Image 1 (cartoon, rainbow, N blue to C red):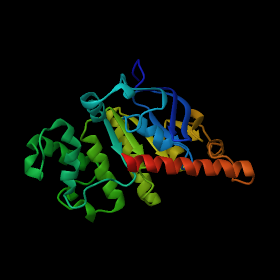
Image 2: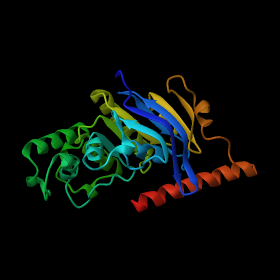
Image 3: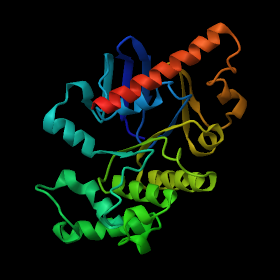
Image 4: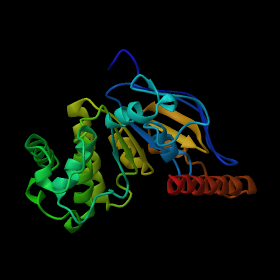
Length: 276
């Protein structure tokens, strides 16, 4: 572990209009930690994750990542920070009509100048690195296939290789297995963990699958209604203890109102994404 945290959040609040998506979140994450953000849809997981690379800016409070105040960064300094943070998305975000290898190479665009149209326009050294990464995620044989010919699990492996092409210090993953079957989900999550440990990356991942989180994370941070309600090491934690993050099934007026609030937060997050 490093002597100083990789991520420090202090009393972070985020509002979308009248909806409070984050309510006073304070969090410290050290280098090399593998952390899961756990909670219901609308609990603030994705919103919180997007604060780490400046895709969202806090309404109040401070977000410090890799020694930088994220809210103060603009232009080149913000691009430089983002180049050190790999992001794995739920829907893969690949370009289906180009090869797997070229999709991975797009992860190096922050280091290049000018447009890149086709594999030959990338430096040979980067092509070699991209191919090595595909070998690492088990897809070397598929390097020259179109990305849209792959299965969902394979596409997410390509997305992992693309994120690694940045040579990041932090790897963010937003519900990376939500679109996958259970077998593929376990394989992808194990791959992310193995790569994180091998490269000593800080990995921060949002999930809603409790058993998967318990088997995968070093540390679990539970969110409910935009607040941290659990922050502990995963070892020795029971499923029942983690389920308290989710609360009971809504049976009273107050609980129905809480669920409605979570749905409103989800809608606000979606509007914010569309508006970017």
